[in-house]
Image (cartoon, rainbow, N blue to C red; front, side, top):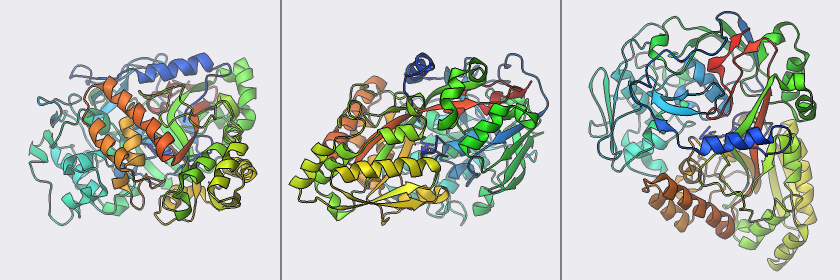
Length: 602
């Protein structure tokens, strides 16, 4: 997932303190400061396996939030406007947070503790998390009674078929592609050949792939076991779209809601108003609540501005919150040091890992000594400092987050934990051996204040090693669109990615499978290594989670020591604050931030 926000538009898939991140989801942290023990506990607990719930676990209504009451209006301060509202186009975390309120899918994550630390995958629109009798090649889902769209139309298997068939259409190009590839039986970008126009020209997926024998039954057929399907279906990118209301590209601005809230108004770049969806039935929903009458969302609220407003805690800001903005770097230490202010905060690790991408498509990057010189020279301290220091981020060693199985805290191939300012002497020697002293290096960076800050200092560190660094600013709103172009102008650029579920299977394949190189895809460094590709295929067949985690860990180490196409920067952590009249404030590990489904006005 790109990280949404910071710079993000990635993953899972990018709204951290200014670093762009994606929703496979896409911010990690350090165990320092007053929140260290809590954050380390968050990391450990998220690595625990999440069970798949049965019918009893999937029955609504959701367990009441202690002390909650209905009514009131909540002000939501957001940095970035929502570029996408069509669930099929949602793959960054700020849009993913909104999706928790307006969209529903076949499955979803239900919090099983009041602190947001424990979850299980349950049936959301379906009666359970799915049943399989052949190890995961065939999955059956039955739709619940009483589930409706905001216009009162019942949700049927016809809508589920439309939801998945439209994913193959050319205009759907920003969301996750796991299930499309699984249905097509391919790891490559050619999955669209299975249904290249989607359902819009009368063509449909064959029953041997997707079967809807009646109005309530949906059966997925795969050519190999897909034991992670319940996880994948819980992603916002696979939430249901309405068949009769499918307006194709226009659906991205005016989707038909299935969750507890619907969109009353949306002025892109300015504001959005959410009101209660009268056709949402809590009896069908084991995950969400509908306590707040109305959410008033205001965009263009930078982290510093939203933090100051919520710290002041006056007027409407007493019921103010941000789904994704974090406490800005300048105020973070003040907030954590004041018990009264800290009492209004939540914090935890996010699944995001930052990476400085080395563009492998550039001829000058073919020499591994050049890539190693970049890796050793790059200072990480400026990046961590830009986002608030160790309370907001932990220096990364590998590509797998502390929140994901397969994480190795001792792995540090470029010595960044010991020398976070970089090793310019070692880098210069490598560059000299390659005969590339003075080599021009184009550094693309986001236009956010954080991006300006870290790129300036990082460029200076690279120049110490003998590079001639030219910085190029990229607008935050289109950052991921620009860096995901195959023929972009940048030699190095930063992205952040988070696991779509707690497995490296949602990290390493989308980022490093050479068969997925395409305009708009997430293999940003354009690495195409035969060993990496074959290992991805091999590991994806391992059904034992522990064995798979160990294999992904080994592949992580191969990428960073033999391929050298990335330099990990930070494991993101998030600290958020709300007004004094905001109740139900919980950091949810899966969402990677505020859980908007539990909020109420005190």
